[in-house]
Image (cartoon, rainbow, N blue to C red; front, side):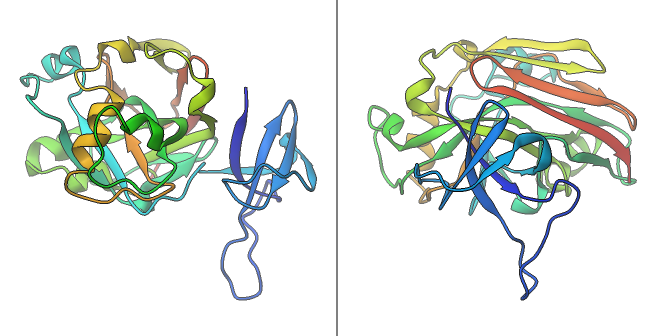
Length: 263
């Protein structure tokens, strides 16, 4: 399985170049080694790093994070909502992104923070007004997303910007697996909290497939290379508390794991 990553060479810090901007590197993971590449799209290997000695970063840095709500009928039902007739779209800010291994910060403004394990699509080329049949050609690869949500604020606000948009509320990673290597359209999505299984669903139960989602979104905005789409969560969402560890696994992709700390 090919695994594309963004990383920092220093495991314990995010180093910067002299102008203060973050030093981000790209690579391909093979076993316990990362081979550096020139970009997320490059395949030419250069320097080698031990995977244990680097800090993984979110696998892409999108211009936008597009999310789909209630894309599993059973999840819509468990929240007391009808299944949508067309994709229900919302956004998370890029500032909410964190990597596997980083901490989710439980905000003082909320008393009900939930996990939502999801399949993430990473866009590989600009997409605008594409058909459902063409849409798969615009997927660079797949990753894992945890759409962390302040459920009490979601109910209070009506719209979801605050509930979904806190810093650290979009763990993603740990890497991108190319579309060509993911053969099944019924991947299983499982979420554990402190080792207890909470979600166990299949992307085959999605109301709207990745192709439908991309075609729908590309009708009203331009998707750019590196953009991230979170495709919705299966049933079983539930609370997180400071001190918890939440792990989202998708077969054929990997595992995204984050601890929860008090903000």
